[in-house]
Length: 188
Image (cartoon, rainbow, N blue to C red; front, side):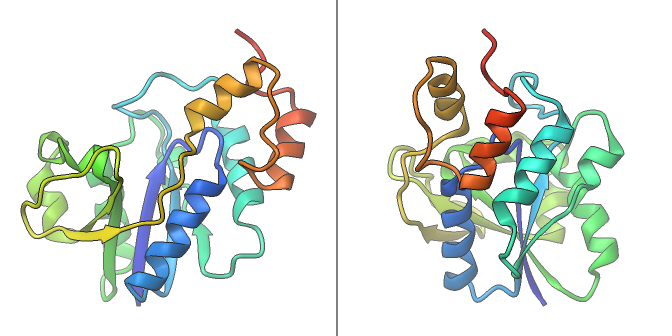
C-alpha cells in the first residue's frame, strides 16, 4: 500500500486539510491518508481545547471519506509529539508499505532541525505541499507537489470564532455544529 501521513493539531480541522489530503491522494496515487493529531506540538503553542475535542472534530471532518483514517498514536503516547517517533511506530506496523509524510512548504524550510531528521528520512518519503506564500527550496530527495491553494488556517478560524464571525464555509457542517455545541474557541 501507498500511505500518506498528515500530522497536525487539527485545531480545528478545516476544509483546507481535507482538500490538501484529497489533492495529494490523487496526485501521488496513494491508497489512504492517515490523519495523525499531535498530542503536544514542539512547534506550536499549547492547545486551547483538549485533545478529546480535536479528535472528535477530526472524526467528524473525515466521516464518510473511506480513504481517510485517523491514527491517534501520538495522543495515546502522550507527551511532546515528535514526527520521527510516529514514523518509527507506523513503520513497525506497516513494514511492507510505502510511507509518505506530507508537510507544508512552511515546515519543510527547517525540517532538517527536527528530532532525528536522518532517521526520519530513512523510514519515509517526504512530500512537500508547495504553498505559494512560503515556497520551499528544492533540496534533499523531497517530492514536491503543487497543491490547490486554499487560504484557510486553523488559527484564522479560531480568531474568527472569538470575534463572533461566521465560519460556515471553512469547516464541515458537522464540525461547525460540534464547535457550537461545545462552545469551543470562544474564550479569550
